[in-house]
Image (cartoon, rainbow, N blue to C red; front, side, top):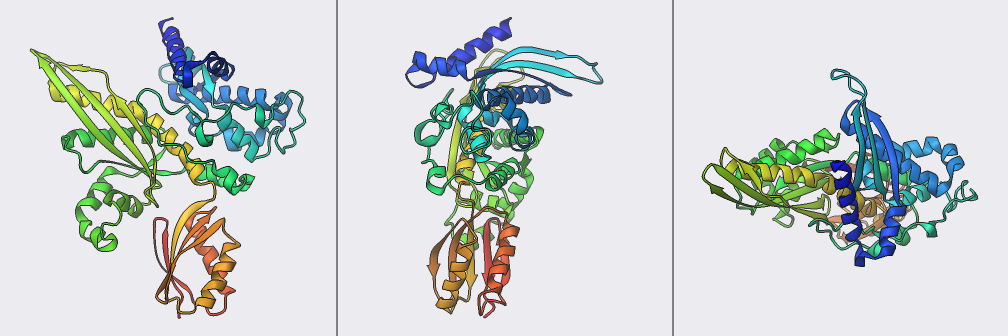
Length: 445
């Protein structure tokens, strides 16, 4: 009973955080709240299955039961099989209705039942991208199916307004790229979903921080523990530390400190997103009772450009320890970081959806570009095969492009070879080096 009451309180608190706290906002939140039931071998898998069941019920409301069954295979691939269902729900509104082990201690079969608010615009965007439902799809004439205009309005500049709650700081939403670049094709949307589901994360602390290194390392360990425990790919912190200590000279020689060392390390280790942790802690003691608090800020960056994707802040409650003040502070840091990580991942994925609207951004350098006409032909042919191509600089020594492409770096390398083969004079172009999303070629002239 108490858990249910707490769930209702959390739900009402989430509704109250909506702009102006209007009755209309509360009604919208209630209308977007769905029931879900899930089973799994662990509590976590059962909970995720229940969230997806709630999303499935929302899909049925949006497009109708018959259309949902007809598109079941596609929906399973692009929506229901997601590794991170928090992308499609407001996790802070979850109300736990039932949690029970139907199996044994050695062979668990967890049942989880909940009510949770579904992020209707996020779900609708997936349906629209794959032409499932009212807008341009075969299910568009389903009776009772909603149109795109029926979906709840997104927040500022097309980003839903779920983000700023409980001390979370979100970067001002960028303009909706889907309007600027056109709606992604189903194939492009599948690429974006796969890219986001397989992103590599790197977590490290703010190098200007004066907090005890022991606390910093424990904060990193907790963040990586969350990532590993939820099947996300994370860079080992020992690799980061080793590169930081051993490669500072190389970093300075290569970059001239034009980019931050943390971004450079993330590029070297092929991380798609890197997270910088900043800590502020305090403690006090009374006889054998010790108390600690932690204020945690986690900034999220896209690696290739260093662009800030967002930031999450959390203030811990006052934690207690009889062992000592340091242990009290450590408890505060560990619990706060772990609680912040679901929001960090969700924000990373949400912002990367917009960031990838015109494809992955690659930096392409071609050396020995003496023939400007030849490079113009190469640029014209390559532009026809990619989402966008921008000339950054061009000299006889080298030409630099920014290329947006719906494909991995290996796919782009193959495309560059195919393009150079049909441009007179570039048949001998060869690959020099790839580092992260930066590629260098030589014309072979």
